[in-house]
Length: 72
Image (tube, rainbow, N blue to C red; front, side, top):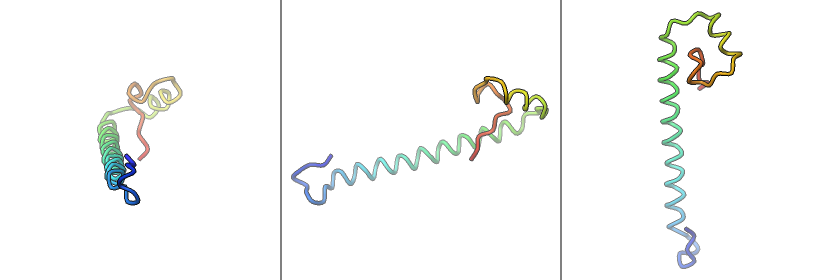
């Protein structure tokens, strides 16, 4: 990306890095929206607090543990 004939500005590298930063911002926002939507869906489920507490100490993933909430 840092082509010697573009020195000292390196326009190609600046465009590539700006694109990568833009993609990071976009994907972070997208992940936040997905987690927010999943938290909202799980809040609508009718789970007792006792069942949620018991599942929290089991070896479940975030998809298996229905009481899991993402921290945003």
